[in-house]
Amino acid sequence: MGNINELCDDLLVKILLQIPTEEVVATSLLSRRWRSVWKLVPKLDFRDYSYKYHATSAVPSDLYTHETLVVLRLRGTIVADVPSKTRLRSLKTLSLRDMSFSSDQTVDRFLSCFPVLETLVVRGWIASNVKTYSIRVPSLRSLDVEELVGGYADPRYDHGYVIDAPRLKFLHMVDHFSGFCSLVNVPEELEAEIHLRFCDSDKLLGSLVSAKQLSLCLKPQMDSCLKGDFDQLVFLELCVMCSLDWLNVILKHSPKLRALRLSRTRHSCQNSRNVRTNWERPTCIPECLTFSLETVEWIAYEGTEEEENVVKYLLENGNLCFKKRWRKAVYGKFSYEILRLGRG
Image (cartoon, rainbow, N blue to C red; front, side, top):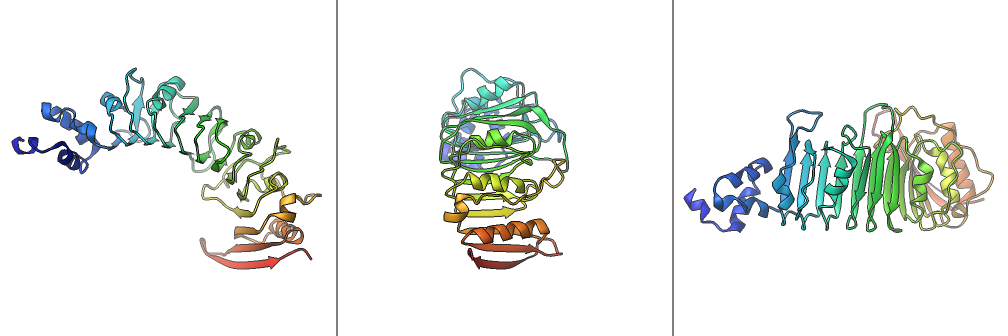
């Protein structure tokens, strides 16, 4: 090790970037020269695959004093406690997958360690001891949360999220388990993609009335009533598998909407036990359909009677370009039809 010990820190860091994170951390045991070199590495990806479905290893305590770390990915690890002294002052990107936290408070303390965090990814936490996953990060700009399941899973109404991120620009949330999601402090100009099976859709949408772009997959609205208008909304994507009955409600409350996309989202809700309600022709024409809506795109259009009724209503009452992507027998194959029709 004599020759390599004489290399400068920059070269040693380049070497460490080429090896797995576990080995990077282990170099701190080589000698006094190597004790702190690993803390100069800007990106760490710590994973534990000892057991597929349960986190088994604790987050290394030395990670909490890594002042130059910019990107950190943790998978299959345990956070039982958070040291009182932490110095992760440079971390901007954090990914948490299949993590186990000891309590709600531990999540709060853990995320408070990152004063300049901008991007957060959360995957798989429902099996931990956490019931309320609080994301209180003042610097956060992008939040990506997914709790997926193949098929149907019973809801856990006492589990959910509280999001307090005043600088958030983009929110992507897919959750097939949780019973609530509260946006307590988010900015007006927010782009959101939301797919929820069991959360209170009315309350959630009430927190997004200032959004400019929304992609929604929600449980059937069951006579829901929105409080407030989407005054800034210009683009809306709506899942037709379970949320088509939301169309009338949202159009009514979106006076400036310019583009509408109806689709079957990639996070399919077709296995959900939620009752799909039918679309009903509204008695009043929404303001956006008369004055602002320019384009409608229907992806995976099948030409059912209900779908034809929706298309007929939109074309009869709007001056817009309507694009249909027909679903063929072969999965993934589409044909296109563009209709440019206005009010007669």
